Length: 110
Length: 116
Image 1 (cartoon, each protein chain N blue to C red):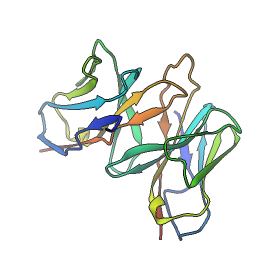
Image 2 (image 1 turned 180 degrees about the vertical axis):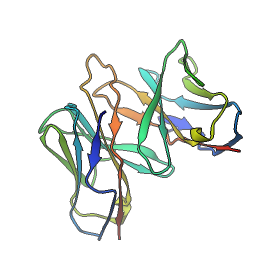
Image 3 (image 1 turned 45 degrees about the horizontal axis):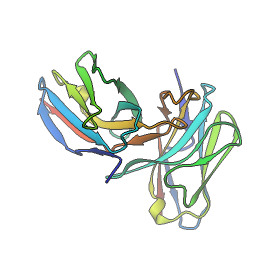
């Protein structure tokens, strides 16, 4: 079983739609969780951290469920510019090492 | 702005060649990392370094070595390139971690290496 699993998609949604991605992780000792965004042929960039209480940044909401070992990302009012691959990333301690999911591709269409 | 630069965006090499990939960061970060990214496999850690002249194996170090002679520079070396090392190589850097806390990793633009 992969340490971090994501549905690869693609998720094709119309502009203005709400879309949600889930990610599961296998290491129950994982400490911190993140969503990174990667545009086509570009490097990954941190989108947001994920906290147990849930956190929101504009149109983006991230949630963590430790009991079920999954994290989620909700995007409201999708924009064309949201089209990208979203990487679920887990930090399990020790030297700033991260474990990356394979990513979920989002395509927002007119 | 943090800047991580990589020596080449695209590189084509032949099987058996020795290949050097260079990474430089300008933010005085202690930690530096080399990943490869392949379709369906995501980013996988090859090697990382906490300090000058210090290196640690990641998840897939076989066929690779690294060098960190200066704080700002971290080199990935393919001793004898093989076709299965055709991939996108990404370098990243971050501040040192204390008490198991995570510091954001900043990535370079990547080098797409093709081994023929």
